[in-house]
Image (cartoon, rainbow, N blue to C red; front, side, top):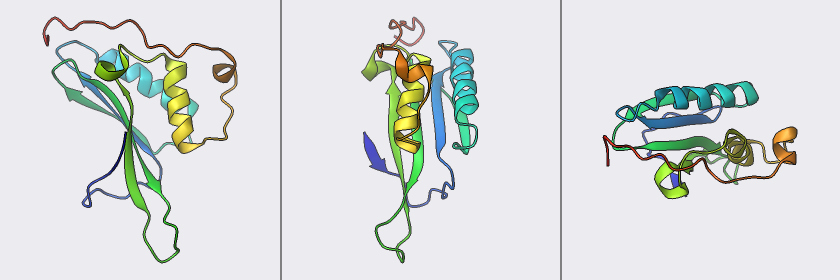
Length: 133
């Protein structure tokens, strides 16, 4: 899903990833782990990874990035893309799958080493949130 970000959004010189996680489900540690993995892998390619507390069983990873305009006089636009949605994708992402999805947006030609050589793109088993169901 690709959408144009709001006009008032600040420009992102480097891509920004947000991880919205449910506090009622106690998924902050999981969100922090994914943030650490993305920052370790894309240390010079990502501007930030933000953790956004939420409720309702939410676990959504989204990226905001600049798309250069076709003409030099026009400003580049900021787009956002949902990389993972627990409810839509079923469960949580494997770390290597999340890294692949980030790479495909910000550095499509980059080799991720062992992450690219092993198969498996299914998300972790769906974990029901008793507080938010």
